[in-house]
Length: 448
Image (tube, rainbow, N blue to C red; front, side, top):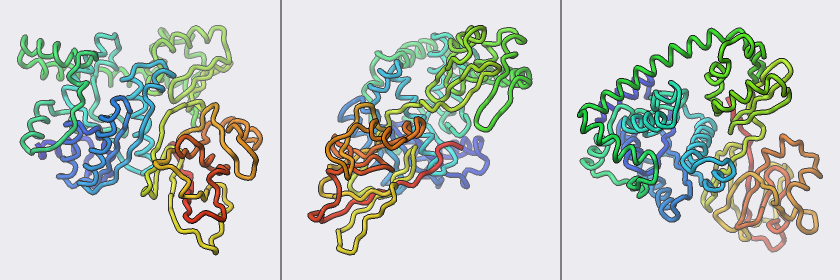
């Protein structure tokens, strides 16, 4: 299996030993086998784990297991906790969809900020078949019938050619340990119904059903490639690029038949839905100034153009945990450095806003870093009493766009530092302080 795995990697990247990989590892058998393959092949990789906090202590045990796996392989491990249920309620999406959005957004930010070449997921052939039927039953175009691609941008899936049975057999023969997600045995979810009932029925009808379905998916993928090439040639004359924006001339809607279909092929990769394309088509007739949003982008209907750009209103509920021994953390907002030291008479507190020096013994670990929220308040150092973060930012004339990027350092349930602006008076260094905790933010770019 190792040889077949290496051949799969080489088909996706012709110089695999020269690249760096970020492996998305849940702790399940698929991702554990994938990590084992990367280790045995001698590739340069790091591990990333998402804790969606959906299964209580089991989720935390999964995270602990993955950290142990990374330690065993002696590779870096990046973890993040999400308030998944809250995110799903706010964005009105299913738990599966919300977890997927949170997962890929954080994984991509982690890959970029750590300058890794590829994000690697453990999707296999059975996942591809199940996704094909999920999309078929929901109703979809060609893009939903190509299953899960082996390579999509910076994401690769080297297990795509292996069946679940192959992976489980290898894990058992090599006595690997992994975590079992009990929800996989339940028929509560659509995917599990397809896995447990539909696929076995099809295999009973045709023993080679899986191979036949995969061949069909491959043919659909080729057809989609031809379609996309035709779409690009057709719409090219209507599009101009301006820095990080894409401008589409409104003539697009009057000169093309079914412009909503062409538009969808253009903007689906930005997270927009087909229904939104229909809404945009109608809005072009009478509503200049209207804005359409996805989780990552926005479309502004101007008088002469549709303007597509990264949305400044992108919201996430990512929470980064900081343990007592952590010295460095890379997030979507920058690189953080943490250090503890004894307080000495000669030590001078830096004045740079990117550095906070706090009383270590007053902090309650693990600390957390997250975006500030409406209703957050703290005790700004040098001021009396509490103040809402929103009022503090207004008083300091922080622009609307900059406000959206402000993060806070949390100790227990209190803000210890509005990062880059002001520490909290309750955690300041006093004459009684014996131990110092130094936090420094180093800004990094989160977009290529």
